Image 1 (cartoon, one colour):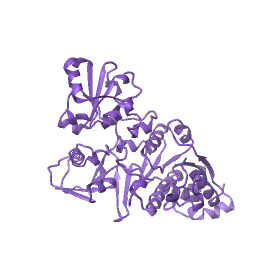
Image 2 (tube, helix red, strand yellow):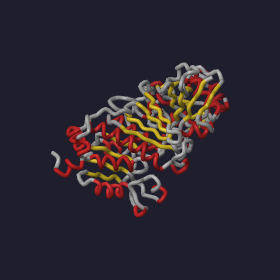
Image 3 (cartoon, helix red, strand yellow):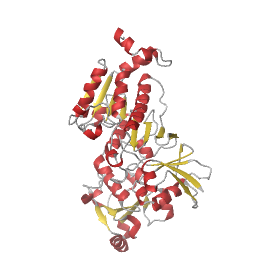
Image 4 (cartoon, helix red, strand yellow):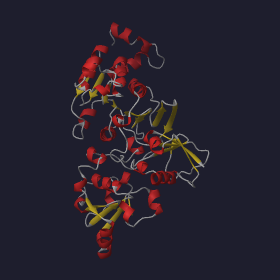
Length: 359
Length: 78
């Protein structure tokens, strides 16, 4: 199965206990898609290619910029303004000619994600934004594929294997995306270049173990690393399993950002809603989308569906008459309305502006 | 008194890596509530993962002074 050249190239794997010839054959037959050829994607791609994963997909629509070179070690100064996926494949083909590379230079979207991901055994999330992270996670849940996740912030990084044999996925720990600009990206918050190498290498280790047939050490476990203090912790996510089952892809730009869609959401002020309730309370349904502990402190009536369960419990939402969604500040309830855009009664959905603050 | 280790942006919002709270906080849900009310920028994160003794913790879980508590926000950089 292996040529003489390959036998020598991978010789350190062959002598590795628990890996050997079988592990290497498994690698050669496997396929891995790396979404994002940036700070994390660079080391992941280098090690997957060097290790001998048979088929590697590289998805990145972005161009290399000068400020990328501090951590994106696949590229040189000559790569600037060139597509990252194409530049990466040039370097990687020279590293290992036995690998089949497939390049995706179009942006990954809800329209093409399932088609792109379906041919791969393992998916790597090395992206740099929440809409794409939720998109990749949801596509992996729908296609039942393991997702090797990593992210970096300043001196800190995280790594986890999500959706492994029915284990927790990203939405189980973060059901709702943060408000736009609440979490800085690398450009805004800065990042230590070498940290991307550490976290990316950890991701590569997990992906290689999975396709080689070994158990990943971070399946359902979130590994946290603080390079400033060399502190690390591994969180067992075993109990993190929410009711919200992902069944289809949505508009992730809208899901993660209120800008651009705000006009399409009907709003009602607290004063106006009180008038409506005085006039015809029976024709109005209130939906509290806050967490259980918040509702326990006090509420204004109606039914309770936490935001993370809004799709799963759609049946409880009225099919006619006005429906008013509320939370503490009006952000989560707006997210709920956006997620329910396909509901038959969606034109009668209202967001309580500013939430309960003005009640 | 409970001690909370802060990760990611929560460390920058609070301004220190470790937070000690003397407030009467009995559960994970109450801790989330306290952090979101005290720090509006933490509220804007919408979703906080809290681990107690390196295990994912549900809102109902009781907290004690000897627990190792970690507050983990979403992180997007890559």
